[in-house]
Amino acid sequence: MTQKPHVIIAGAGLGGLTAALSLLQSGFDVDVFEQASELKEVGAGVQISANGTRVLHALGLGDAIRALSWEPRGKELRLWNTGETWPMFDLGAESVERYGFPYYMFHRADLHEALASAVRHAKPDAIHLNAKAVGCDSAGSRPGLRLESGATIRGDVLVGADGVHSAVRQALFGPDQPKFTGCIAWRGVIRADRLPSHLLRPVGTNWVGPGGHVVHYFLRRGELLNFVGVRERSDWQVESWIAAGTVDECLEDFAGWHEDIRTFIRNIETPYKWALKVREPMARWTQGRVTLLGDACHSTLPFMAQGAVMAIEDGFILARCLAAAPGDPEAALKRYEAARRERANKVVTGSAGMIDLFHNSELADHAKAQAFMARQFQPEQTRARYEWLFSYDATRVAV
Ligand SMILES: Cc1cc2nc3c(=O)[nH]c(=O)nc-3n(C[C@H](O)[C@H](O)[C@H](O)COP(=O)(O)OP(=O)(O)OC[C@H]3O[C@@H](n4cnc5c(N)ncnc54)[C@H](O)[C@@H]3O)c2cc1C
Image 1 (cartoon, protein in one colour):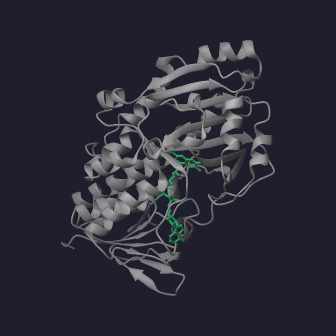
Image 2 (cartoon, rainbow, N blue to C red; image 1 turned 180 degrees about the vertical axis):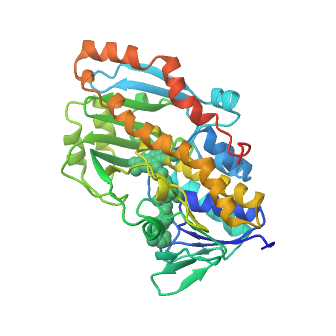
């Protein structure tokens, strides 16, 4: 085959759309099949570190994302009950100076819309809605995506970017066996003008406490605040962005926590709860001309804020690999998987390892908490945890 392949993508999330845009910009023909009836993201935040914004800049989205995002001056740690504060790392100009690109926080819908409109600008009818994948056929040189409608869409390459419950992954490798972590994540978006002025500091914050932690940061130029509160409890096991809880239930989960946390919770209109599950890192992502990306092959706990960033890196590297060997898609997919799997799996295991750091039982006792923070959050330790992530260059790394 000497033509560039026609690529079929299942799923128009952040990963699928980044792959679609990267491929279209490299001259491939692309069609994306999305189960939803309209293209929209949930009302929640997403942090994109420099290794992700580097890719978005390379795709020509630098101005668009700067206008939509909120850029923190840095990140801070706070203790769950007293509110004592420690610096975690500097961002803002420091991120640009160190890694070449900014660290941005987004409303997911804003970032999703920026990617979708760039895809549609490149190919107006690239995204097909109401198109739920139910399986795939990976044999031969024309893999097919089977849709719920009964249609099978064939192309030269098929990519499953259909998220944590991926139908393409299940068709390739069988059902997965997620394990419940014993943690649930509460999330909510709060209008910044409802918050007292002392809660408007221009930093992202990680509160740490025994059996739970809270992350908050602003979105959309500072107009909104994103709240994520993780608590260890075993009675809720639904893995979904849209399962609603109540403010009272959320307050109960954070009983005894600092008044700032309780102020945030009281101002959430509808808190949603997501049961956090882990999956073993996968040994393979690819079969012939079918591969996976993003949460479909390496869903991760959100504790390093890297799941979407990994999906963005995957999409860009996939396009680079196919562009490097357009006549041999099978070899290109092998190169893609070889370039990505170890790094993505390291995020999966690293994120799971953060539970012990953020939820440590020593944080219950004030003196032990002081010693724990001094021991575990020295600047060089924090740098070692994140440097390998932020400094990665998906536009130049060898593939
Ligand atoms: C509480 C929480 C906070 C997080 N915070 C961060 C963060 O700050 N930074 C970060 O980098 N990551 C974060 N993550 C992780 C991040 O949300 C995911 O890693 C990211 O969304 C994965 O992108 P994706 O495109 O692979 O999958 P998804 O975003 O899940 O997109 C999959 C798409 O496929 C579609 N789809 C699903 N099934 C089918 C089907 N059968 N047929 C067709 N279409 C289908 C879906 O509708 C969706 O549009 C967080 C996760 C959670 C739970």
